[in-house]
Image (cartoon, rainbow, N blue to C red; front, side):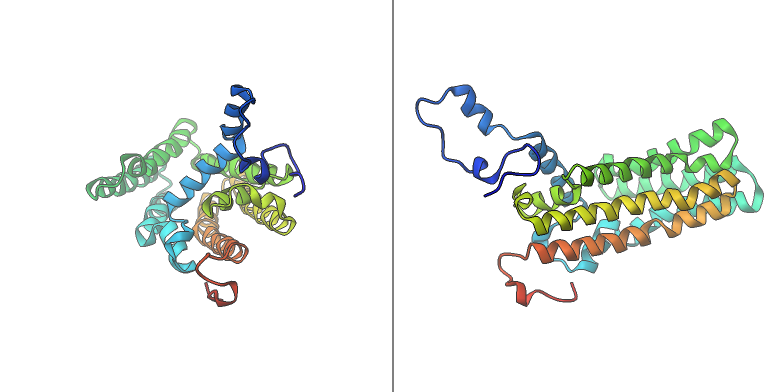
Length: 267
């Protein structure tokens, strides 16, 4: 088995037999300690599974994507506050009213989630994001600044995916490896490494493309077009790329109880 491209624990090392009786205790403890990449991968894989990306659930591609975006409620929670802001500001040019309606709708959805016994962190996350996004335009008086937090988020995610691919630890591979139970063993497979590299680049391109398309409207102060483009490049683009990633990952990692030739070609 060849050595990994970057320093890290190989599968041979990971599953090596216990050290001989003469081995120093510190060395044995080091071998049992997860590497940084393993810790990050396990954390990301657990987060993805909680979000609904679970290979063991047996969901079709469409069902998985629908679950991740939260169904109709998730779509409404994402789109309505922003849509209310765009329509209100476009019609009235009243920044405070537009932001108040946006935050108010986010508060309503938060209350619904709490009444439905959703975890408090998940329930409050949308409201917190809406309040933070509204704070900057209230301070500057510029309606287009409502989108600055989104720009920062896209930069962060885009940079994370791109850098991970360039240093040959593509995030998609790390997440999929721990979702499928493969860990970091995929790094020994050149085909998987290349595939996860390009998938990670595709995710980086999605986030950075949002910036490239939306920033000109931001600098032009065109709030209506900026908001409309953000809606169009939000859930639809995310859902399409998530579906593609899911399909490719399943082809690379067929379920143990399903021979590759019997895999559903439509899923």
